[in-house]
Every structure is written in structure tokens, then in C-alpha cells.
Image: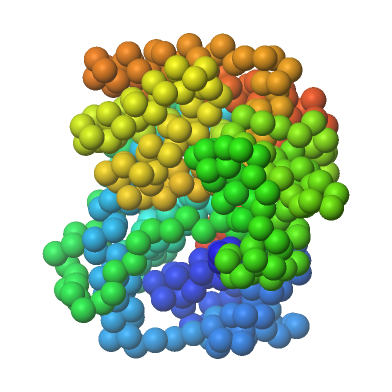
Length: 496
């Protein structure tokens, strides 16, 4: 079990990439600590942590009166070698990620654009007027900001960093204004968003993306000499948390095992020492994990006997969903749910026709088994697992795999709700429908039906979380990861 990286790493990587791409050059002034903190929506301490690391590694100098100055310099040969190595390591994974990003990010951006108001329209119009070739991503980041979803913003920047778009600019291009064709494309996107034109927006955004890429002087692969000796890197969506805990990953693992039906007979867990040895973690971590599972209603300690782990569909009514660490993970579950609701239609439409016949039959068989047993409450988790295992796009597997990891935290919540409702007829009807559509290979209707069901379940889940005491600020936080500090220290652009 590995710990997730901390939030400062994302901002650090953003700056390092912009040093190597010559966006920031030797002697340039970075924004103030206060400005970085404000633009990235992080605390002053987090901003200071990033800058101290950059200073310790020789990228910047920090003086109380002179500010933060870029100290990094490299020869043209070093610059070209860095870029060649960067893209050589991603040679095989970038085409897959580019296609996956088009499916996921366009859907998220469409949702964000349909939420802009008159004030946002004015601010974004002004931003378009100022955009240069090297910082067009500010427009998209500002649009995604409207979702108030930290996972969506994190995913956007992870994709941008892995793609290395700023690396493709020539140094002479970085401060140039974007050409009129790009500005017009962005204006068309903005206008369609203001008109809430959900059908036209994806087409316009795909066209705009191609126009933006044309502005890069090095956008053609023929301009690079790729090294076949470089080890290949696959895209990984790293989720940044301020306090990563191994026990959260272990809870996800246990919930997954329950969902798979591993514990059918209310088995007792091994001793904490045996569990710690088998999972290669400390006994304290095991204790915290079991405590979390108990508060989620998934295990039941019995004095003098041990800890009984409850089988799939069972639930301990002593669950405590209102405790802080449970609330935090339920909020992340909701954020993952939102991403799924906004992207599932496009992903289903584009990928399900490309599954193998064997994979599709396996999915249908699983759904029929659930239908026959009357246990369709986990149909959305089954959908995610199917994509994780069989999707031909590896980056979609990675993204939906992370969504599944957060989504499974909502499983106890679903079981608790179903005890009160006795049976979830919505999931049963949905399961019946998608089996029929899969057998007919009607993937267009499958995508629409999946979207409608998951969107409906999102609304139900939101209300359920409110009933548990979660607040709008927890489900729709105003602060998020937004490292878009691309301006020089003496510039101050208006942001949404």
C-alpha cells in the first residue's frame, strides 16, 4: 500500500515544467507567496513549502526585498535533451491519454461552461483577450473552477502535466498572443456555454483543441527524435490529500473484497498481528482500518471472540457516518460520483462498442446473476469494475479505477439506505434495461440510459449526504487545486 503524494508536489511539478520549457527564464520574477497562495487556493504555509523546495533544489532564490527570482538556467542542448527524454518516456501512452482526455475533460468542461453566469462571461471574455500561446489552459481551468469539484480540477492538471503541452512551445512563442483563430474558437466555446448548448459544445471544443495545437511550433512528432531506450511511463492519476492515510486504502481494499463476495459467512478477521504481517503494515494501521470499517458498519467487534466482517449486503446499524474522517471520504465519494455522472455517457458511447465479445458477455452474466438474486444495488460499481478491467483505453481504466476507489466508500451508505427502503427498484429496472441494450448492441441508448440513471442516483445521494449532516461547503468546496500562476511577478490578471 503506497501513500499518495502531498498537494505541494503538484504545484512544484507545475513550476519545474515551466522552468524547463523556458516559460520562466533565468532572472524572471515569480509572483509573491501571497499571490501563489491565492491563485492556487492553498495556504501560505503550503506555498512556502513549495518555494523552499524550489530554492533548495536551485530553481529560485528568495530574498525579502527582491522577491522570488528564477535561478535556473540550461543550455539549448540541455533543454532539447530534457524535452526529448520527457516525450520519449510517454511515446506509447500519450496517444491513449489524448483520446481518453478528450472523452473525460470535454464532458467536464461542458458541465462547467453551462454554469457560467454574466459575471463569469465577462471575466472569461477578458481572459481570452489576454491569452498567450503558452497559457491557454487558464481558460479551461477557470471553466472547471465552476464545478467546485477538487477531484475534477486535480484530474485536469494531472493530465496537463503529463501531456507536457508547455514543452511544445518554442521559447520565442511563449509570450506571444494567441492567434485570432484560437481566440475565436474560445469565444465560440464561451458563447455556446452561455447559451447552455450541451449538444454543440463538445464538437466546438474538439475543433478548438485542434486549432490550439496548431499554434505550437513543435506540435508534430516528426520534429522530435524519440529515444527508444527511454523507459516508458504510463499515466497515473495521483490524488493529492493533505493527510494521506494507508488505512483509507486498506478500507477500500476490504470493501472491494466484500463486494466480490469473499466474506459470505460472517467470517472473523485474523488477529491484528497476522493482518499486519500479511498486508505489510503496522499493527496500529490495522487497528485504525478496523475502526474505520466498524464506524462504516462493515465489521462488528464481539467481546472475547474477535472482529466479524459482515458479508455483502449486510450492515451494522451502529455505523457512525457523521464522524470527521468518514465525512471527508464521503465528500470525496460525492466528488467522484459527480465526475462519473458528467462523463459516463461519452465514455460508454465511445468505449463499449470496442469491448471484446468475451468481456461483454462476462458483464452481462454478472448483471443477470445480480438480477436473479435481487441484489442490483451495486450495479454502478459493477459498471466501473467492467471498465477498469476491460476498457481498451488504459487512461480511462486508470481514471475510472480511481473513481471506483472513492465510489466504494459509498457502498455502506447505499446498504444502510436500502435497509430502510427494503429494495432498490431503480437499480433493478436499470439492470434490466442495460442487459437488453447490451444484448441488442444498442450502445447509443445504453449511454443515454446510463447517464440518466447515474445522474438520478447522484441527486439521491446528495440529499442522503445532506440528511447525514454534510454541508454544501463539504460537497461543493470553493477552494480547489488550481495552479495557474503562469504570469510574471509584475502581472496581475483578473480571475473568476
